[in-house]
Image 1 (cartoon, rainbow, N blue to C red):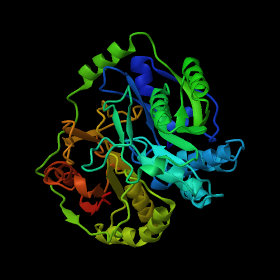
Image 2: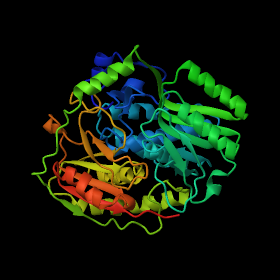
Image 3: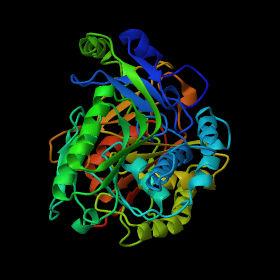
Length: 459
């Protein structure tokens, strides 16, 4: 992960004996450079590979987040064109960006932001963690239509299908395209996730979608691939069963070695370390201001119901003026700014954070998003998730899950990690009184907040 200090997996390696082993590096960086480790609050799985380029748990330069997604998409494009999927000239830029070399993240993004040749495909991203990653990969294909799965039920929209993510805290996924014919076109289907640990999620997705609409070619793309040989054999067997090609593209491969009894050991660590989160001090209130972005009418706020190449072109034209609105609302002298998206709503906040970073070259702009996944926080430089904020869900979830989390936003015991301002971006369904009384109130104890809601395009 980024920076040249301690590897943010040392703590878990020492306490639980979990070990990551680097493999091949098609993206020009190794597994240990892309990820750290944390402990899940999940009895089914002990560890979490925490990505430094995903924009979920770890605030990161938005240009490296978008750039890593564009690079993954470029590797997919090369594979679909029948060429070798390696990073080539882009690999050193990603490596330098991860090591904190000034200008490298922007250079990576700049060299990949224009597609190298349009490829027609359907790109499917997984909620919640991979919605921006997959959308960025679709950007690199130029001609791709994008859709992400969702855990949000939308009245009046009949699901195209659904599938299960077996190891996740929240397992059910729905596909809700506004136009079901989006998934019926005779083009390759690209499935994008942040990691492939066993490949079961992709396996379940392929089975479900192929039963509805068989096709000849699929591509599985992820930042990291740590599957074992048995998992790889299972995927090859599925390709034979479906009579379809299944290619795999990734930035880095490797494996995660787990000692015997690691699940029980992890739960013991959770029990030991729980209750140490710093409670918000609501006596402190830095205030908040709400701004209107001037969101273009009818433009989708993401890929929940589909996002076409024409939507991408329209969004690109509007990013700079919307970022200017955010910049003008920041407090004077803010030198460290966090742009915080919410759960599945990742891509538009990422792109606005990127545009804000471009507009404010002398300001450190970072991007991350809230999540429904419970993870243990340990305020140690050798641990990937050092602090967590806990707040109520604010989008009326039908599954009854009430708690949500924001990681590494609170600086904890290191004042140098504090933000001078926070830009909170939500879609309109999440813009509720529960947001104001929950997440927004918590953030106001840390820094001045600029809040903007993006209207959703209803099918």
